[in-house]
Amino acid sequence: MLFEIQTFGKKVLRTATKEVPEINDEVRKFVSNMFETMYAAEGIGLAAPQVDRSIRLFIVDLSPIDESENKRVYINPKIYALGEQTDEYEEGCLSLPTIREVVTRPTSLKIRYQNLEGHSFDEEVDGFLARVIQHEYDHLEKTLFVDHLSSLKRSLLKKTLNKIASGEIEIEASENFEL
Ligand code: NI
Image (tube, rainbow, N blue to C red; front, side, top):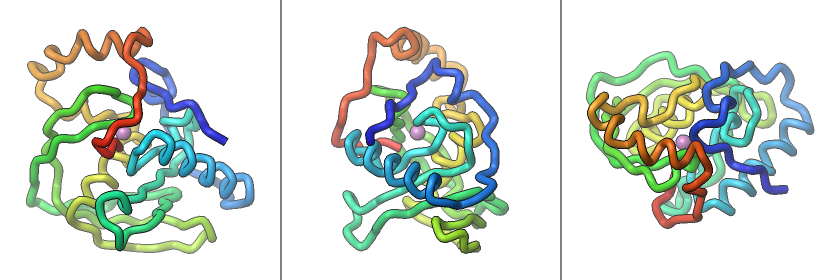
């Protein structure tokens, strides 16, 4: 089942998220539908608020750009350390169609999370995965990547953001690997 991806202007993207209390079949079904939705939109990362659920869960699949990668599911994640070194990359987001901007982020992080079987993991991550995780984690914290831009850059995007909010710009599958 495909979910409707929520775009800029929808309240759910600015709503606090709750922990997933129990990892059960309902959650596993939800995650399976999230993957279906993400693949249909040709994205490589998707967070629950983007499909209208205010829960702490996101998915990642970098296999379109790295064939050694596979499905990754992060439930109740907690980023508890970020590296000091930063890099720049032009990000996109399924909830912000047509917008791509350079965002500076730490290159490494430590994250604690649960998987679909309810097992807990503690991982150190760097490289592109660390960027994608930070972008998706931001969605759980009501933050969009445009919030990281300078106020000048944000003001230049105002028109486009208004068009997304009013439905004039819609999501199209792109080859840009949106997050
Ligand atoms: Ni996004």
